[in-house]
Length: 149
Image (cartoon, rainbow, N blue to C red; front, side, top):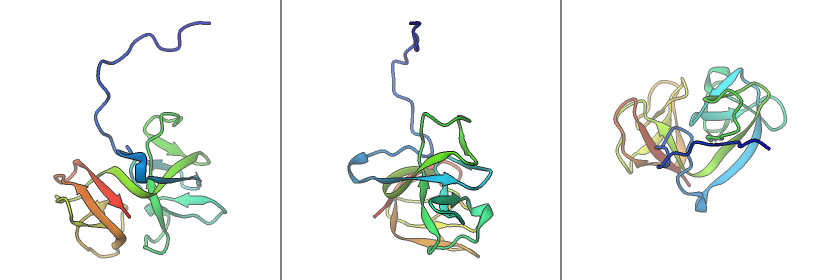
């Protein structure tokens, strides 16, 4: 049998959107993607089918439809995004790395914008994730972490 991996990195890769930094409080479920694609570390919403999810562009985002955040998985077929029909992992509770749409500080509330980005302030069409806070500060467009209780 040939070797599967012959090159090894000396260090673990840095955080990327969708990484779950601590599994002790993580509540992760599996769902089937109904949208054409979904990036890593993005908010996901109830789909039309049983156990289905959609991205913000395919629904009117709201706290009532919010299911959780897409989790990084090495088994992703595309590499950087899930594709339609693929089973994906959704973090419902716990810490996860995401991209901040604006500059955020640890302890700030977590808002999801109408376009499906994470923020710390309200805007038209945005909603606050109940019992969630920014766990790691970040500049606009950079990665930070949120914690959903």
